[in-house]
Amino acid sequence: MPIFHRTYRSFDGKVWRHFRWWQIVRQEWRIMLKSRLFRQLLGISLFLTGLHVVLVYLIDTVANMQGHPLSEAIREMEIARIDEAFFLRFIRLQTPLVFIACIFSGSRLICNDFRYNLVDIYFSKPLSWWDYVAGKTVTLLLVGFGMTVFPAWLLLLLHLAFLPSLDTLGEVAGLALPNLMFGLTVSLPCALGVLASSAVFNGPRFASIAVFMVLMANAAFGVVLPEILDQDSLRIIAFPVALNRLGEWYFGAVNLLEDVSWKQSAVYVTAVCAVALAMVCMKVRRAGAAS
Image 1: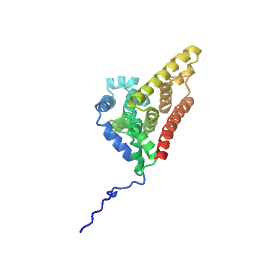
Image 2: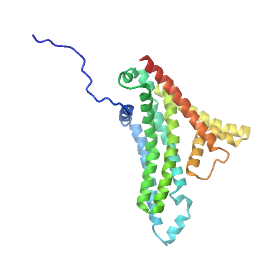
Image 3: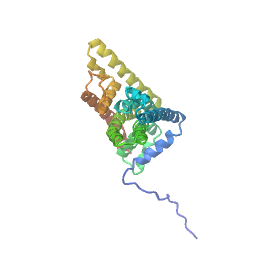
Image 4: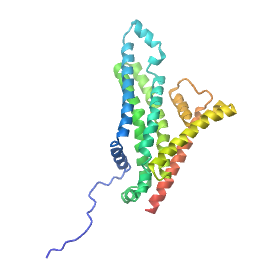
């Protein structure tokens, strides 16, 4: 008689030796894109980008009208220039959307895994705790980049296409890195801060409220303390002020925050990112060791 063996199905998939965290990114993005609110936030970001595309086209078209009185008049207008200030304003405009999207998308990323015991499933696969942290962080970084860096680079390419010349190519090459740095400076603290809150609290609602309340309290202290102590340099306590000061430094724009040092802002932002990353790593590493 035949003998039947009851065994588990052997693993026949591909084992990734590098970039294993990318599987987490793919899975989280599949979940996020099913959310109507997340798609609406992306739609608002695309709409704002589209308005800037039209603006770039109009400015470059007028710039090509050599000798026209309208062309000379528009060139004298500071707002009608595709320069450092243009991209600084663009990323600043997108920053609130990045913050909202990161809170909505990231508040569930870690706490739900612990809540539903999904961490054991993650670590039962060929994933380390560092792969887990990297995957969650990159997921939210792509959210931020998708609203800041990638649209800014698209505008740069369109600017070069609408006004092709060696001078434009030099401008585009010089603005690519500042856009990347400012987008990273905005996106990374948002991503790590939301993940840290998600690692501390047991539910996405509490994690979202905690991040929002901390930011509101931080902004309030940044407004009240300089007035009480009569020291404008204390405005750096407000985290958005530090981010904006770094953006001004990246683009070499006019310093609107004269009493705020970009070096202190850089130390402040780096310290916040380091503390948030340490909180996430400690939580995940303990879970990985237990499993």
